[in-house]
Image (cartoon, rainbow, N blue to C red; front, side):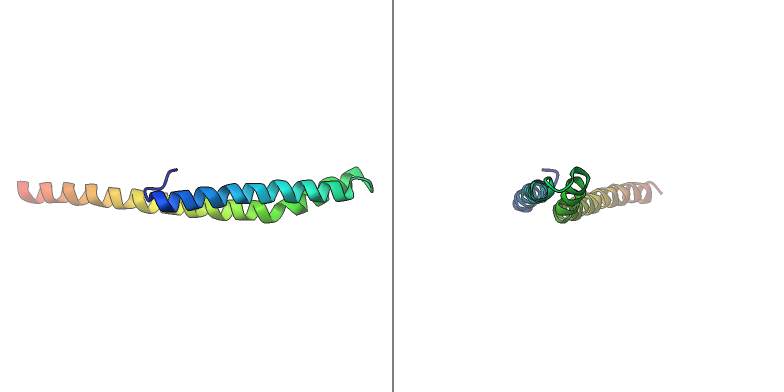
Length: 91
């Protein structure tokens, strides 16, 4: 996992897997429920059935990206403080 906290990374990976499972199950059950009516209607219902899982995946990926961004900003702040302290000692 990309997160530094291993426990949080495990939980996020688990939830991401569950969201993918919800996406797959929602799409399959919706498709199989309506394929006898019309194939186009079945594909549209599969898309609608997959939406809750896709929204969950999107939210979790946003959370991961936000945590990575925060960690990178902390590293950059430490580097900038180190550069500033070196420049201050040279003057």
